[in-house]
Length: 550
Ligand code: ADP
Ligand code: XUL
Image (cartoon, rainbow, N blue to C red):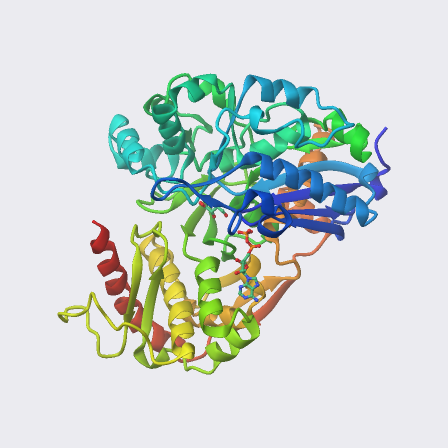
């Protein structure tokens, strides 16, 4: 017997770049407890910076998976310390940073199936559980060669876009797997199964290797997004015998099975608690936002991302089309920008001593348009466009002038530096979205989430540059909420009498809670007249940085 309906709770996790977060919702989907583990400060023994470590070669970034396992031990302890009653948890699901890949050893799979509740999880799922103990994560951009090989093998990048919703991107899991296969062939051969970060977390709770869901699976350059099945052509272009290592992909609405006995005995979960398929952090954020197709969702986490829903998949040359996490027949568009919060943070440290209040005062002390001063800061290799470097222009710099590629060395004050960064980032996001065919106009509504969405001064710049009102939700952690909401929805579907038509995901969640939208900023009347011309100058600047690396 499980907990009575009214006392049931739903547990969601988000294993993001910088931390592992957990949230417990009651039967009306209200938060009753939450906890988090910050990798850099709570697990200093792994020596991460921003949750990751640079690899030995250029553009490589990795995480030791045992750090994430340890974080699960700690976050559950922290929930228990808050007197969260885990014996009421009816279902669990999670979001994970996208694209990272974990390679299970034979020993790891049997350890997963026979966990001893007397011991910590990380003492059992340790380095030996994985044949590759450095998981490449989404920041890794070292697989240009493998991207080219995979696209060539299946007939070019247009074909890759048609099949998988994205051309090959360095961080996508297929090219990453191919690199492991080529450079560590024995390890690849020894890998019994391969998980994404999301399905790895599901595996821990399930006590066996969990399937990958369609939505996060769309970030691999391996899934046929229309057929919702692995594409044989892409698998063959990637590595041998890959289908058996991936297992069958499933809908994110799938109940995978009961929670592992380990959690029942060690943390008092009820034996009836169900594990629901986990998905990527961006799909989960879209699920957490509970808005319809008219909205543009903007996530300001470690990476900045723009997300939108589509009934039919568009053919994007750049950017990504993924299977929708909650509407089975629909699709989501995703644009990911690598130079997001970490660049803002670096600027804050240099120009405002790391104080966001001071940073905002400086930002607000400058006028929209910044007297013609603009900057592009691609501290790390940007994803779209593929470009790296910093370029500052003042009002006198022109696209065709001889020193356009040099620009100016530094602006005259911290406030001009700060505004140039934030306006430049948002102009970048708008320019790429417009290139993809997204129209910013009087009907556009923006919903912001992620760590930096608590910063109203930054949201005002978004409102002005996008010329659209910006909203937030009471909970700024949409990916985390989305995980717990999905746990509730999948369980509802699982328990529903098959003769009764099921509510849609949104209707189910909104029948229990509200989406708590709060308007925070509106665009100024003169915004479009300021930013439309700046957009053109911005594109010329980004083009210069792009040409620099070609
Ligand atoms: P992720 O989910 O990718 O781990 P989060 O969504 O938790 O990241 O966002 C973390 C980021 O939020 C940090 O890198 C930090 O720079 C940014 N952040 C936190 N508070 C503020 C603030 N007041 N203003 C701007 N950015 C902030
Ligand atoms: C999306 C992407 C990042 C990660 C980490 O394609 O690479 O947003 O999901 O958040």
